[in-house]
Length: 201
Image 1: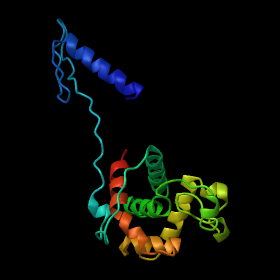
Image 2 (image 1 turned 90 degrees about the horizontal axis):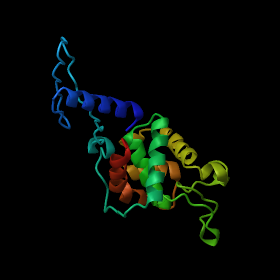
Image 3 (image 1 turned 120 degrees about the vertical axis):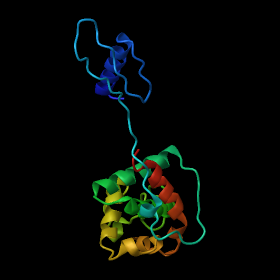
Image 4 (image 1 turned 180 degrees about the vertical axis):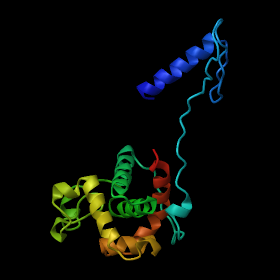
């Protein structure tokens, strides 16, 4: 709760108590005027309203394809998902774009900002989206910055004609050009739930 809200709630509660009114957690109260005063103001309770979660009609407008995969996210993975969502909003794109981006990252890195993995590394792929410096995605430092790598992915997605009307795996593959083009589909439900849980958090 910020300082202004704390001051407002404290003042409201104190005023209601002094006037003999009972202020419920979500009910407006009217304090009794003090002796000799006219027209005491009404006291209105202050409530924090949390925005609704995005609906599935926005997140998964075409339904999912095939068997879906799930796992519990660690704190680091949640942070990376929130970074992807923040970059999506900054790019002026919507919840569906965030679902595509997070599903892509789930397939590419399990939402882990991977550095170079030595002998098991896929060429020079790095970061949340396993982008390659040698393919023009940016420097290693840029690609391992979640905001930069997400923005780069979304820039590619914007250039895919009709991506909104495609199955998620086709939209992701059009950007990533993966050797496993159908593997993105399995993460659509998990990505949608992640965006629903964190889009307004």
